Length: 201
Image 1 (tube, rainbow, N blue to C red):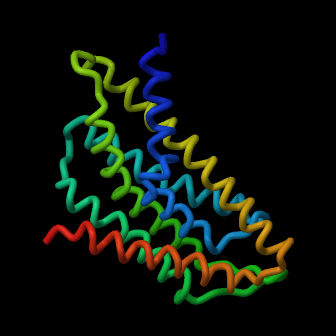
Image 2: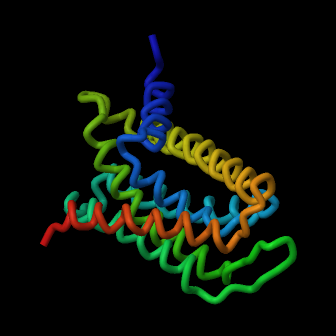
């Protein structure tokens, strides 16, 4: 029989890696679009900022300290995808060697942290629906396990995105700018559809 910790660890991992709940995956794709494999350290810091953001609101919402309408959160998540994609395309770039380029990282980190707060509210809606009745005293371990599971799934997704970009940039010899425009454009298009589907007003 699984322990409560392992059960919620698996729930967190499955939730973020579930292709049917692809909005979080799409945000990570947009977030990673401007980075190549050799820039994995910068991306790791960026993903950590996103993790800090969604951990804060996930904990606060699970503990009933804050509450947001689920329909509004469902709309705001694709908004974060759209803004990230547009930033990838239109923000000033600083070109460096090997056809790679960097954005102003401080702005990226702020986006990742702030947008993480929004995604954490989305995670909390799922977590609250999965909490075991009569196990209120186990809320903190459940919350911790779920968050670790989300983080592990997130890292796996990022690793796959970087592997894909390596193939495209280094084996197929596609330029970074062209790859970024393709990925960001696709993510923005899907985000717009999701926004129309979830518009709450």
